Length: 604
Image (cartoon, rainbow, N blue to C red; front, side):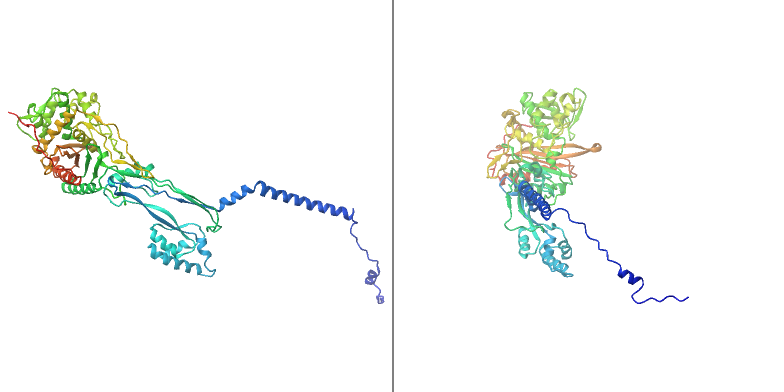
């Protein structure tokens, strides 16, 4: 069926076009324009008040606090070390001192900031700078270049460079590189006095010897420098700068004579090697003042490269004094009136005490007619027991204690031992007699020397010391305080024992200790020392006084476990002679003016 035709302009499209258009209008406005302006203005004013209030709060109320926080972030403080005081010998010669040094550092950000932002430019610049620096610092340029690159603000390049090297580095004007002042401890005399001086550790604190004991005196008080720095660590020109000066430490002056110390150490080391001894010590003390001129240990460590922090054996090692302690028994016998220098005894090789204890001399011999002086000169154990048995045990103990046994000398060195002196009531039946000839009691070298120094000083015991005093910042000298002197025995008793000791050198076991031109009084010793596990060693020693007519010096030489001979007269006395002769000449002490008047050693 045919579809009806449609005329042009007719149909659905035409119908839609002919329909009326519907337009949607926005909702009508409410209020008036003035009201809307008022609301907007109120909102703007509210925001303005809010921001203004915040600004006032920040700048007015919190301004100082915020500024302070910002300033704190910009401030950088660098410590300035207080130079450590010097250690000097008795004549002012330097044994320990601090020298100026610098630690070189780099701010990697600052270094990279001046390098063009091109591929490989930073590596090239770093290697060029490291090559120039490496020649001055003696450092491999490749490893140094790696330290220049990065983003860290503080990297160490080299520590402890000398001022000359630091100035050369500074003249290169390499961006980011600066130096921090520090100090280094040096010991110009090396091993000389190393056992006394000690050393400082890597952090700058005393680790041994007087460096440790006088840490608070020697150490300076550090200062500081504070300045403003930028975001990359650069100093802000014209910014805040504050300087707190460092305060140097005080100098410590010793009683030690550097030249005598050096000579004694050399002589001691030579004898230790010659005798096969494990170690040895030498002490020289001024008997009038207690000043120690020499305190030498064999094999002393070099404080510049220390291998040990052990205390000096002269103050720390304890051993039986042996025959050198017989002078205490002799002084007690004279002081209490039980004998005189010429009292007569028939002395056997072997003697048994009333309680059944048997003692022998070092060498077998027939009965000998000896005076008290002869018993000391020949170093007879049996004769000493025969005399000393007349002293009550407590009296024997009291005299040893008064001479300083069992008590620290107060010399001022670390590690000092008080020795070993048991109460008299704790002595067994043998010890009560053995102490008379130096067994059953333990002493240090300083304590043994102190006995002879006391006798040389007419019975007056003065405190031995190794530090003369200190110098404060303005150069004022402060002497080391010492304890009050103690009169141990009468001057007459001391003079008599000293005269008896001359026989021990002139006619007895100490002939190798003689010094040409000078009268010498002294005593040999062969003593025991006990190690762990009950191992027994021998200490061979000689302690003497020079000159005997005008006493100035007490000198003690002790060798531990010598192999060539166990007798002090053989191994220790020769060192005594060498050291004493050198000391007498060095100090300008005149030779003896009169010959000795010796007591008889035998009788008929």
